[in-house]
Length: 110
Image (cartoon, rainbow, N blue to C red; front, side, top):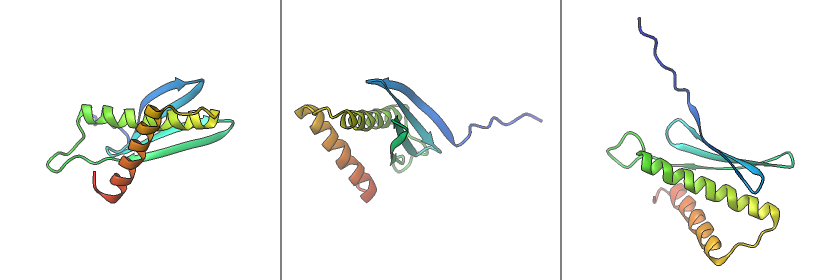
């Protein structure tokens, strides 16, 4: 009997360092994306629930890549906040768009 490959429910999609802080981006099942940052023994984290459009069973690679970028942007903004870094107008605009996208997702408008 052929062995079935167990993919697990969680995948680490990215581990990267930003300004000396590690950022972890993970995916649970196929639709929950989490970013984590650890600073001085504290865990800073957030998540997005992104589901495929009607008619698709999974997100495309391009869609996953965009969600990973969103998670990275949220984590980097958190690190900048921890460090007391003032955001440029462009960075603040990007953060505002990220926060609005999160609100739209929670409302089911995305």
